[in-house]
Image 1 (cartoon, rainbow, N blue to C red):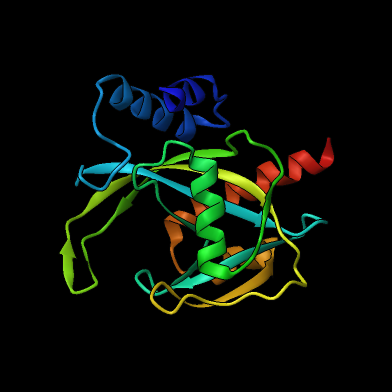
Image 2: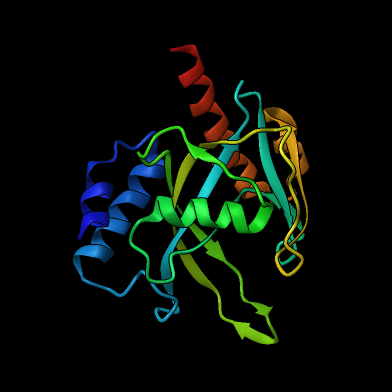
Length: 188
C-alpha cells in the first residue's frame, strides 16, 4: 500500500505527529479498512493548508457542522491518493483551483470528531486519520462557499486565522503548528 509507505517515510515535526504517525502505521499494518467510511471508528481524511503566493494568508471556510472557521478538506472515500482528495475538496468547498507546493505530506494528525447529525442521520463519534498538504491559491481569484458544508470562505492573515477559529484544540495543536512550519519554510 503506497499510503503506508508514504506515512512511514514522513518525518514528524513534533511529538503529536510522531504519536499520530505511529497509530496510523499500526492501523494500516493491521490492514484495517481505513479509506472508506465503512470503518465507523476511524478513516482517512485529507486537509489543505492553502496559502497565498507570499505565504502570508490562509484560506479558511466557516464550517456548518463545527460552527467555526477551519481548514478545508474531506474524506478519502476509497481514494488512496490523499493529495488528490485534498485538491478535490478545496475545489468543491471553495471553487478555488489550488496547486500543491509539494506532493509531500505537510502534516499528520488524528482528529476526534464528536457525534453529530449530517444529512438527517446521526454519526457516532469517530477518528479522522488526517493527512494535510500545503497548497497555494490565488487570493484574488473568485471563491464561493458550498452551502451544504460551509457558510463562507475567506482569506485571513496567518495569525488572524488562529483568532477566527473557535476550536481551541485545533488552534493550539494544529493551526499554530501549520503556521510555524510554514514560517520555517519561508526562513529557509
